[in-house]
Image (cartoon, rainbow, N blue to C red; front, side, top):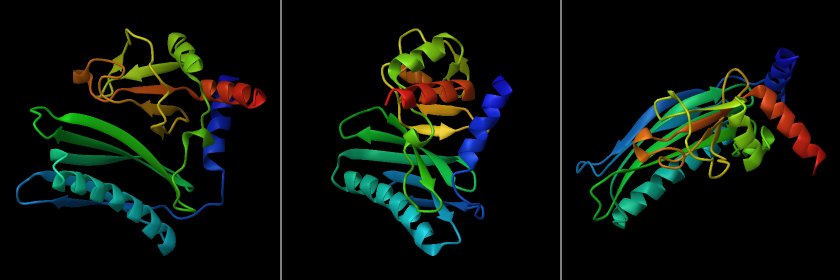
Length: 215
């Protein structure tokens, strides 16, 4: 029965719209001579030029926002990198990590976030398309081994405190599970990095059905 549910979840993730070609993601770099910022960022290539431009303009806007904050001395140093987490015919999911040093600060502050783009429209895809879960359900899933936590290096960990909120920084895993990305210090000590909670396909199916019935 569990295998059937898992298959159904994966099929749901892959079957929203007709198939299109795979996107090509290339890495670009932006920096300055003073090394106040070093930004590695993705450039997405899709056959449809309007969609490609829409996605890349959204990414460029994030870079410009970081540059502007440096120019206005909000940050004295910024480093950014990214990972391509998931892609199918309908979406592409990217994870960004930004290390920022605020003015007059001696330490870097890590921020992690994810963006999932719809390859048919270029729009950002909210987590609610795939997962509708509340804080109590997420905590119960973790307590009952229907979800698990990993640290910033993706090592499995046991959380000593309750989950403070449901993160909507999400990414899809190839087995149909969904990962929720948290900021450094939210789930564990800051040194553990940006931790994640991964929710199983069985739990996704259960909470989605329950919460849809309660709408």
